[in-house]
Length: 512
Image 1 (cartoon, rainbow, N blue to C red):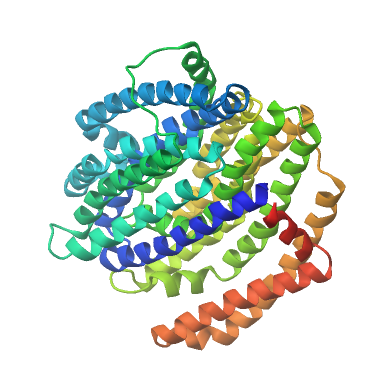
Image 2 (image 1 turned 180 degrees about the horizontal axis):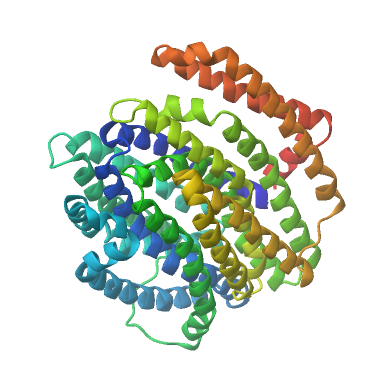
């Protein structure tokens, strides 16, 4: 059941990521790795930082176990009443944050992108674009709550489809207004806020269809809401630490040459494909599943869910990471090198992608291990792990930035994420929440062997298709497609032959 739900989320996430690539290809063609691109990416990241802090990072992780518990113990009416009280508190808090941020935007920009202050035109553009994008926080945070509500009802498709609407809105705004508006960056900024509204209306309609659309009472600190806030506090700190990692990266990138923020963005977008399809999908499905199993004291089922989530995450992310490390240059060249995105931007972004590839399995495992704590209402332990990861990220950034430039920022993120994984896994094991079973211990080393074989084949074949990458768009796409198909097929065949995976197990998991 868990893997079937994860496949539902992953399927829509895959569609979203494909549209996201189309969006980013357009953005690269119009903006490239430029000062205007840097300004938009910082403006777009700001509401997302707050969203992950207040909504996904704290509110939703505390809300879903409580809502799922109320649904199981007290029924739909009580669960809906709790959701309404939570929604009211969230809405008014978000309105206050949005208003204050609009007023304080220049100071916020000085805090997160201090290097832009050396270029007044770039700084003013970033402030203006951030004011346009920031209302997105209000809508997307409400989307997060409504999505958590639907996920707890085992209705994963609607929330998983919402990011598709974001990409459609941004593509539409870019195509419609990039040449007629002030700049392509302005068109994108307006599209961001419009996308937030569209996603909110979509989720509200789906909640109404499920007969679970919350009304909006006056804010009230009921006992259930107080319990929610108590659980949120350490999660806010933990999410704040995670987001502070991203802020540190942004601050350092803003101090480097024009385009550094853009290089990080484009490489991150490639990494987000497997991260979103695998990590977010499994993590989203795992939290309510574990919450129910823990609440019903199904200890063996909870252990099995955690082990299978880790197994299937590694089965998909280890080969993806190996492939991104080996063929980073062809990937960036084919996807982005056109228009304003030149060969130099390709070379730097490919280096950043290689560094991110080192951390891809860790990025996913953090999302898979954290629900093991949240399902048991333990929001404090992940905070401590995140703090140590933050310290490591800062230290590594300072060590790597001089020899590696913007690539060092990505490498620091990758290595600090692996530290986070080690601390989370050790904590779960020490508390008796996780113990790798025989199947997991047997298959992971075999996955690594299959990855090595695949990487060697990709390395050899990439030399063969190098001339194709100098040809027209059709030849470039065929070359990249050939590399991808070779990687997928070779890993699947080797993994099957040495029993790192079994198709029968995958089919059973998908049927639930």
